[in-house]
Length: 316
Image (cartoon, rainbow, N blue to C red; front, side):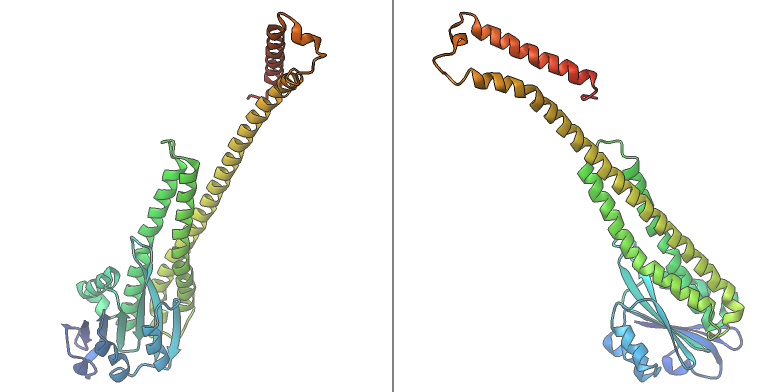
């Protein structure tokens, strides 16, 4: 689907103009949105707009890293939207010229729709040109990153304050799941941050000097997101180390208990081994009360060793 919005030189907003009428002298600037286009519609990037072949190729080869390329008076952006449930990235491509903005994406995106509606709802935005329209798209994309980060923070806090007796293995799986999701977000947010740094420090974009403060605001948001990602990574790393340490402590406690039990039974096994040899010349075998005496001696040895280990703190 292709939709258009155009701003006339008289300051009026016109929707759904045919592509052939967008280049007229009465049009100040326009925005064409390719929303999940068909193959024939997508080919208009080449046949109608005549964009650079490398930029058109990048639109069809998903998923490109967020970047910015300059082709004479056309500036090409590759941006990423994040799906709120799966945290997978969806590509959004922007072509920005002095009098036009062309957005291209194969997935219907709420962020682009919000930018589309915001442009139409505020007449002051009409006069700011195509570069401001690109800003609106970028701003909406970045704003939707925050709920994803907050979702991971909530999951992490739930694990950190878990009071339900969840097993260590389940907690470890949860922490590694959070880190996996965090890696998906990091692969989008860090390149987007680098891209906005280039935008803020570029003098090639149309009207960029007047609108640098808007792009700088997006860059500040991405810096905050990057800091939140680093904070969550550090926290999950600490949680992982704590779980590993706790698991090692429990294992050491179990091994210590088993060692104490084994040590107590060593002299008892020694006595049982001696009187189990059945030699004829063993006078103790013929004692009337020998069996009970040996049992009493074995019990006394075991109890004495238990008291000794208890005093040394081996059961603490």
